Amino acid sequence: MNLVAIGLFLVFVALTLWITWWAARRTHSAQDFYAAGGRITGFQNGLAIAGDFMSAGAFLGLTGLVVANGFDGLIYAVGYTTGMPIVVFLLAEKLRRLGRFTFTDVVCTRLAERPIRVFAACASLVVVAFYLIAQMVGAGQLIQLLFGLDYLYAEFVVGVLMVCYVMFGGMVATTWVQIVKAVLLLIAGFTIAGLLLARFGFDLNALLARAATVHPKGAAILAPQFPAKDPLSAFSLGLALMLGTAGLPHILMRFFTVPDARAARLSVFWAATFMNAFFALIFLLGFGAVALTAGNPAYVDAAGMLRGGGNMAAIHLSHAVGGDAMMGFVSAVAFATILAVVAGLTLAGASAVSHDLYASVFRRGRVDERREVQVSRIATLVLGLVAIGLGIAFKGQNVAYMVSLAFAVACSSTFPVLILALYWRGLTTLGAVAGGTAGLVSALVLTVLGPAVWVKVLGHAAPLFPLDPPALVTLPLAFVTCWLVSRLDRSHQGATDRARFETVPAE
Amino acid sequence: MSPEPPASATEPLGLGLFLLGLLAAAFFGFIGLCAFAPAWSAAPLVPGGSVNAAFVLGLGVIGLGVVLTGLYVVVANRAEARVFRARS
Image 1 (cartoon, rainbow over the protein chains, first blue to last red):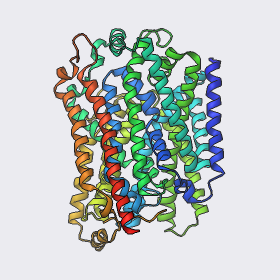
Image 2 (spheres, one colour; image 1 turned 90 degrees about the horizontal axis):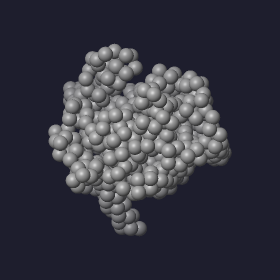
Image 3 (cartoon, chains in turn purple, brown; image 1 turned 120 degrees about the vertical axis):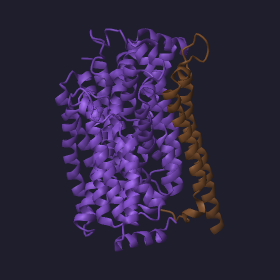
Image 4 (tube, each protein chain N blue to C red; image 1 turned 90 degrees about the vertical axis):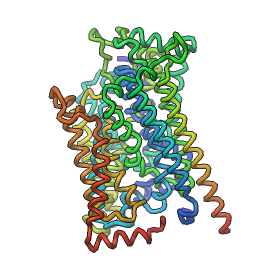
């Protein structure tokens, strides 16, 4: 047991719980619960969005991916930064203008409400589930490493804490926790990077040379490897990372927490600045982790595997440069990160159930806000249990990689429907539901049959579908299906959908 | 919430698409070079050094994202401010 690290860890977790409690007292209406009352400023929202991105997947997962695969891990880091600019170029303004709480509200301004809400809720839940897996696995390994707690119990601890966060705080709480955490994580990242560079006399070449010497794969880790071996998967990954962001429900939700479109745009700029700085830092942290942990018996076992699992590279790095205190601080920030991201995700999932399915489809809008928030809290509880189960099933997976699967699903399902609804007059309800569902189902099925699940979770020798992620196939499939079905749609509803494109205030 | 002018008046969609194209070209160019010119992307920038072209390109794409986003936000927010002024 590492008492300094554990002490610091508990202090920070208590701090974030206090923020949740403080925010909970300010949550009065459904507008507060989902959208923080629209009172968050652009700068604050930018930090919160950056916080959503600097998740366990980014910090723990990417560092771990670089330790395992070298430069290939950084392709993920670069890819994650390309999503947010697309959101501001194409979506931010229109979303603000048309929506209330979720991107689904936006699509429903011109298409038939009930079928779209059912589709969007399913798609949101699948995306949220993949994203949740990554956070749960990261959190479980962290608690296991720090407290020596069994992985199974660690998962339950994380699950219970996450439900507490969301149930009592809602969007105000998750936003504030994200803001505080984003600042702490940036401080931690830059401090580690500074200490790391000081170790090597501020000579980047010396750091990289050291990493290449101690890593089992040698100098190969300094250059990209997998794109040359499997170019199709590399482009598929690029597509998923670049366009997936624009379909992530928990990110799009954040555009409704600021007072106007101007603040929404400004928040994207701040988000891009902070998160891109952080992802650039991963270049340093990843290879620093290789240089200082590979071959060091304090951090790797006899077989050369990182103690506590591959996702713990960043934690070991913080210990290597700053001792127990740094490790405690970084663990606490990483854990707060995970809780905050998980809370945001759960909230997005819960609002899909309570707002899209329950209030709009099941009750057809005849429901009071109090009841809707209640249903949202029940959904949160169920999602918490699902997250615990998935976290246990996917134990040992790299979390940055799991997040990329969520991106693949998002860019094949919600993204095509949203972009066509905003920009293409011809889209009909039938086309949107058919295309979105085709993308969602194919992305899900091909991910299960691909290397991600078929080989790594189910233990088969070779995948039935080689592309990993499947976005290169499923994204065009979704767009073509949307287009084709809309074109062939001769229904009365179809005619109404096309006509309503005119009256939507965005155009 | 403050009243907002119609999107067509403020949203520089053409600029958005152009910047989108730039960013996509840079990012897929980066992936393409990694995939089809691995020897080039792995070559050290200075003889005997460890920093190679892939580092520079990767960090370049990350930096470009911030620059393009900033550019777009400045243009769009100024356009919107003009519309508000014209109204009042």
